[in-house]
Image 1 (cartoon, rainbow, N blue to C red):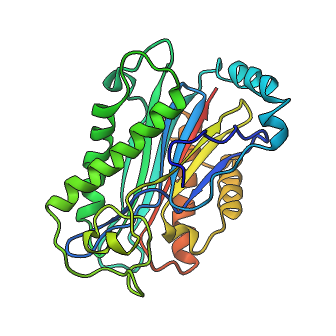
Image 2: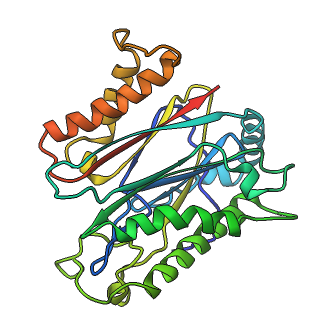
Length: 300
């Protein structure tokens, strides 16, 4: 796998995005952990998603050749739009004895990252960490991954923003995994018929069996027609397809009967209701796992 090759071209068809089964695979001591979804938004108009499943989409041959100049112009034009992002989340323990998921919502960490202002206008961070066998690793990742990212975020002159940010993300995952393994036990797990994830922060004894902390990274170009990004653990996607989940959220956002508390904008009430209703519905459909649903509203 070419970790530092060119990123895929932006999506052209505007639509809500669903993150299913993602980048951060976490666990507790002694086992490991699984993480489902994460995204880092930069430049106000791009979302860099780290995911655990899905192959890198290569650009069509015609775009690489004759259409290259036209594509570049479209990207530059779109990137002039700065979107505001705001996250909402709902959690349910399901039938598990404890809540092992963790999450982080940082709507704006631009100041902390201190990026070159001429190249990156805004940085946001959203993550869902799906723990199994305990909460220690998912909690560790929730506390440390974004801190490591901030420390490693590119400074000074940058030739390629996409490649530099991608390398930063890869280094951040590797460093966080190494930090966790220093304090992790070398017992249990579900690889070789027991561990059900292939990407993990932790699971040191199974790294030689193919488990890795390296995430898949994809860039998504936001458009004025995009409304939200959905991040969730497999507790949701065991009983919902991504399309069903997106349509469920859309129906909630169009529900005029949702009541708004005094002083709270109606749009916030609808997104909060969408998260809670979707999490509740996942439990009703029989998801026995922890369920975490995060929806990031794309403001225009």
